Amino acid sequence: MQVHPPDPGPPGLSLIRKGDFRSIARAISLIENNMPGSEELLRGLENRHVPVIGITGPPGAGKSTLVDALTMHAVEHKMKLAILCVDPSSRFHSGALLGDRIRMNRWQDHAQVYIRSLASRGSVGGLHPHIFQITDLLSNAGFDYILIETVGVGQSEIDIAKLADQVVIVLVPESGDDIQGMKAGILEIGDIFVVNKSDRAGASQYLQSLKSSLQFQTGKTFSDLKFLQTVATEEKGIGELYEAIMENSKHISSKKSFTFFEERAWQLILEYQMRDIDREQLNRSLQTSADQPGFNIYRFVIAYADGLQKK
Ligand SMILES: Nc1nc2c(ncn2[C@@H]2O[C@H](COP(=O)(O)OP(=O)(O)OP(=O)(O)O)[C@@H](O)[C@H]2O)c(=O)[nH]1
Ligand SMILES: [Mg+2]
Image 1: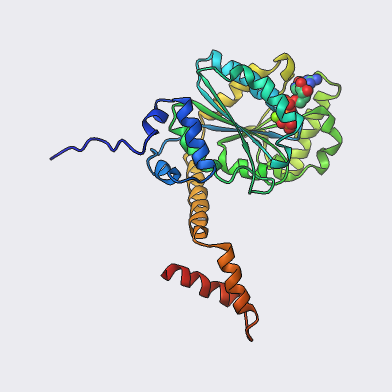
Image 2 (image 1 turned 90 degrees about the vertical axis):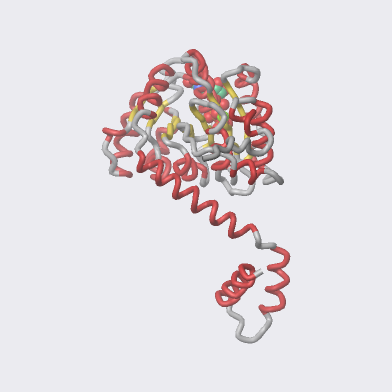
């Protein structure tokens, strides 16, 4: 039997597999902007899974400072990391992000760390619309872990739960009074709860009230959850957080991975189905139909979609 050499894939993929940062950056831009060549690239990917860690929490809780300190630990442990910072578009030019950039700058030319900011345009309050594809690409680029920092507002914390194998929720003692009002959603998705800025008053009381509201709001038991206090600016508690993340990574269930697959497949089917729909053409079609007697939008949509399929 003749053995064919493996398909080398589209240009750039072999360099991506070797972990070439410039090729990775180009490929992400291609995917981010849905440019020609991006689908070919995605179709050339191997089915690899690298643990994805979501770091979320209210604005200013110290997520970036924690990510930076965690990066230091990971680098010392000879890990290779990809870090995605997803910011709601409206915050893209805020001082906070600039602050993140300056802080994270020390990793800019580091061979073990790849950092990329993504604006969450298109998906209101959520993650980037092509975040699944971007993490799949990074999973093929030789990283040990993928970290995704996102502000826990709007839809993003729900999205991160569909993408990350484990979610770290970063809170601060000052959020004490909000805790009863805090959406069950954000509490529901956490695997590790971090009370950062524990140099401030009331940190341990806050941790206690967090535990009781978690039990009250989500009915979860604590056996699978971890609670930690950190002072990110002084790198206190970071070793414990790092160990907690590593420990959790050992226990990612195949059930969870399969649920992720289903979610990805679902999202992609939606995307592919929508791909042929031209809004302007839809508008024209509607304009001619909506005035007709007996118009019904449900019948219209089915007929419209049938028409697209037959094309
Ligand atoms: N006192 C104290 N300040 C901290 C700590 N961690 C972070 N900060 C400060 O809190 C501010 C916000 O920190 P960031 O790391 O930018 O917070 P963030 O959650 O990434 O912020 P956004 O991405 O804008 O939501 C900065 O001024 C940090 O220096 C801490 O443990 N203690
Ligand atoms: Mg930040």
